[in-house]
Image (cartoon, rainbow, N blue to C red):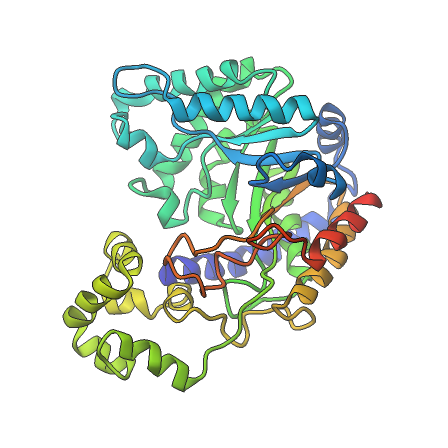
Length: 408
């Protein structure tokens, strides 16, 4: 992940001046974005993973939910129960007035069900499945996002970025002539120049291009609100398509760990320093497996080099230590419930002023009790995104979002 993040920052900084310069000289309005907004009834006000809390969803001002499509078929070609259950859940959403942006399955889901995207002979089947989902969910979903964040290793595996772009592109191409009122597109996890460049031949099949952004929550640099506008303009100038902010949010908790606190964590696994851990990584991994099996399994699955390099690299070290480093924050908005509310209060008016932005989805509705990456309940990185806490109580951000959306 560290190499991935460094490459993204390097490639973005290399190309950003040209694309930003071009974008500011382009027309100030986006006719294609305006047409897309008319198709969906205006600026998309969305939230991820809201389930069926309809009264509060509407009170918060949301009209859309973003959620995954379970892989439709089992090995015998029968529709899986998880797919049918999600379809019925979404039917209830639609009847309640909540529209759906549906994410198609990721490459590894296809592999798990016997359709390996790396094999050319499976392309026809991938196209068939894409068309099936489009047709079967017509009248229930209003937009489709093909896969998720190709280029981010945990979503892309076992594909390369060029393979991931083709995986997306052939599905968009198959759905495009049949889509009618359903918007179709894809997203990237940050600017990801390599993915968006690889997608150029397929942009003609997109109604939108999506971007996921978490300024101030993952990386120790470029943590300023204006980065949202800069990168949205960059993606618009690069693709020429309406831009959808498919995921964005801000953590309501997370602080740096002290040296002593980090030493205490290392001592759980039988060492007192990162240096000692690197020298005894086999023993450390054995202890991690006993104490924190999710950290162990995630490391074994995702490390592309040595285990120590993975544990202590940018991004995953935040999980290992259950912390957010000192500079991983937007200075004006500390990672507190009040800071999270302030972030939303300021960001929404900025987004609404950009004519090429189709809408935005807040990540997410409710806090998680445990981090899905490392399994720890005190890890802020994947547990403190919600507008509600894990018990369902409204945080200050709930009211901040509600008030901001009223003005859009």
